[in-house]
Length: 515
Image (cartoon, rainbow, N blue to C red; front, top):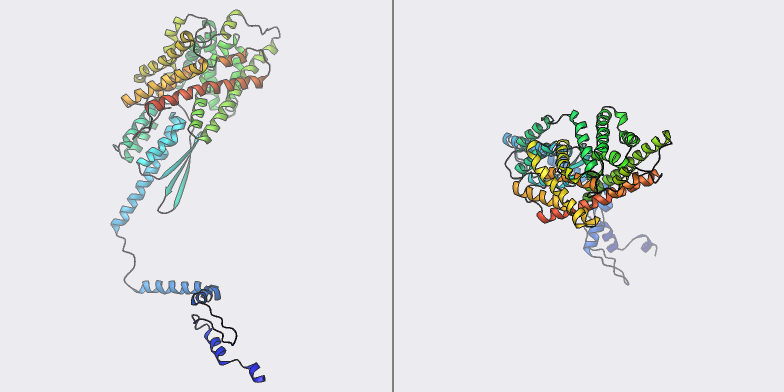
């Protein structure tokens, strides 16, 4: 009995000797007994007894030893698994990398040019993506007001490179037309990237055609014509609004040179205009007709409709706050004058009451003056948008067509406000798209000028906020902002329908530069 307790049977001793570190792939485990027989498959034993389970560092050591052995063998042998890189291959790779970098540099410069010269904001991502696909550059673009995010993707190296391109927006329709012509040449493969970069530098270095000292006279002309056409002013009120507009232009140039004036120059100039405007509507309202945020709100609405939510929401919020600032400044200027001179009554005179009820059909002066003021208004905007003389006839023609349709619907047809807001915008958008399709030239400048006719004429619902019946500055600014949004929604709808009529599937090679 003692013998049997200290020594195991021979079969068990043999099985134990099998499970040593020298032999891990043993046959199936068997325990022989009179009552129990346990058998496990070979696959289970191999999985459990692998080195990764028994000794975790063993596999790593084996790989390191194997890699060192291979490296040592590759040093002492003349053959290699890679072919020798020749000088020609090195030169070819260098040229390919330089070509990729050159195309990326062209896209960055093109982005800055489009933003600086006044390209429609809702078209920026579309245009850049179209050009990037033409140049075989894998890139993504996200636009926010005054900044473009560009991401270049390298699918082979699995890397990305993101660039922030900051650039404030402005208007130079002549240079924008040159950029549009360059896009057509690049899209058709008629110029190289090197030539396109040289052309961009040439356009950027081209001096301004209109000097800055001309801006006060441009602002005065726009206010003079706008007071008579849109706000029912007489020539006396129109002259005063022109003088206030000249002061506004000089103040704008002055504030641009001093950083401290930039955050408050709109409010301060509106306070001064509201203080000196005696017949309030045709003088105060017409004097800052240039900075009405109609174009910004129309662009924001089109961006929202196009599902560009980031830039659309940011631009809408800015335009609403900007409208609040204008309304608050004008109201504060008027209240300041009443505080200094308490004898002033808020009862308007007969002429000022006529101006308060004025619209496209009811004006103080004869409507035959429209044959003078309508083209003169377009000529002033041509200079403000920096267009050259050969483009003036086309711009004036499109603007006159938009104003004529607006006048016919308002005075002869008696159409409701919703129709008057949409149909003139549809007309100018349709004419502009047809001209682009027939001539191959950019017509965005003509449509943009015609839009500036529609914004002041459709703001008659907001004029009552400056009549002095309410002392709530916040409600006045809110009414002005809501009226701007209502006006621009109709303009945006008309432009989108016109674009759909002419370009239902978009352009094939040249990206569209219109609304």
